[in-house]
Length: 314
Image 1 (cartoon, helix red, strand yellow):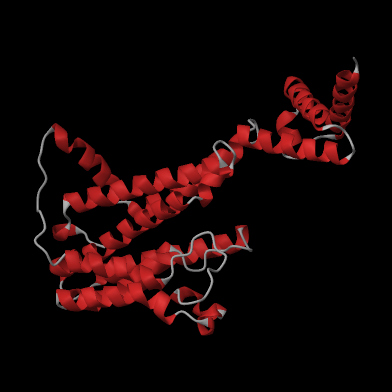
Image 2 (image 1 turned 90 degrees about the horizontal axis):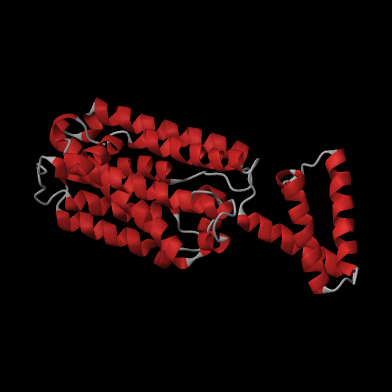
């Protein structure tokens, strides 16, 4: 949220580092989703907490930047720069929601991290003048609120943004106000402490400068990186079949074959043979995506029959 005289290079570098950590997180998620690495990784506890740690770092820096902006421009709620930045974030959040409702109607992003940043900035802005003890107390309350106050009353759709429901709503990015507001408030409290003004110069500062560049353009980076990653892997899947998808296809093939009373070993060899023939003939990607032409379907059927027959010849 800061700019101009309040901008500290190390804050931009920290934000840039968080951005690239997020990039790595989403890259790993996409690799698992498209079958290049184990799909179970997306549901592991460690990966879950890694995502929470990255999100917390962003929110912490939001709170810290609010204090820096206050020092540069005076009361935030009377600062045009604050409201311009807030309107940009709120508009981006609305755009993300609109696109997600179109692309993922079953799991739309109705209150993701951009929505959280917009709302928590409004809540935290008046608190930048508050004493540290009060800010820390409010952060503790935000952390304690979900386990203490959660109940069926908040299960209504209109209250999903609070984080006080008894279940997690289906969404591709769900970051409710509670307990995540705590990270923003902790950033506000931390900014009350003496902050370093400069970083060392010279070659050692090259990496911070590069990170700082991305940190100064964090919203653009956030909005474009995942669509680009997901689009790249979607395009790649048109031509290359990831190993995870091949294993899944062979497993389903074996199950179907076995259900038709064939022996498991025979099914495994037949399906592996069919995949090898599909790769040689060039229709393997279309076979996995269930996008074969009529001619390719006939060829695939003949190949499967041939593989099954060849395997049964003594």
